[in-house]
Image (cartoon, rainbow, N blue to C red):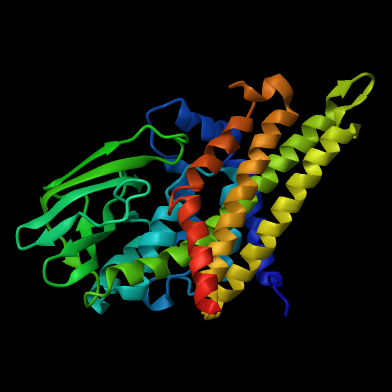
Length: 366
């Protein structure tokens, strides 16, 4: 079984890498940290013009009609460059939810606008890290409750939201975040280049997504696909951080020789390489399972998620150590990758939650 990408997909990856190496530099990322801007608008517009937001949307809805594998190679390069744009929220989460469960009318309205970048979407499912119950309610009096944290919730035009109804249990709903009854505030987070928000609903209008699907089951399927895509972002970022550390240790001399030649440094990079390659193998298998809707996608997605999160954290931590005392300073870029690693490790559920998912899915498979 060959899990390598095709020549066309590798071409897309190379083009994306060339583009982002010029347009999403460390200076661009720092411009978001140093200003009140929530994302890099000029970069986002160029990404839209390249058609990346339309990659996995069917042609009948104004998309390019490509697949998940093409989206995976784009995700890897976005992670490598730390692109400060709301791509994952709008594409991995909101777009995929509407594709899977939206009614025909909802798909006709939202998908062309998501493809063209006219709308930015997000997913509002969390009610606090580790929260297990859904307390946000929807009734004839509207939507009431709070969602926190919501990725890019401060800039999104709408959200796909998980809420509880008195009659139909939990379900997914579409909510216009610019309408009355919605209050949103930006949260302080580890990585301000990917903003997080608190959304408070007080009588906001909400419409069921599609025919009123089982919200918990639909959310689990959505997050499995997102987990694979985020794993590719984490692999891209991990590779960039490891390359950064290797380049520094080769040019930093101590006792008349590059510190990369010392055995302790070699051991660090060997451990980083093993963790990254394990994560890459799991992500590739997850991409295959997602592209062909294989029955073992839930287990493959959880495994990819856990291994990629662990590898990204390990690599970014060791990259700071490899840079010595200067690695902790603002002037060096090590902290940019460390921030992103911390943010991505919790954006669609914490590590303990995904590890529990692996255990439960292994038991179910047995």
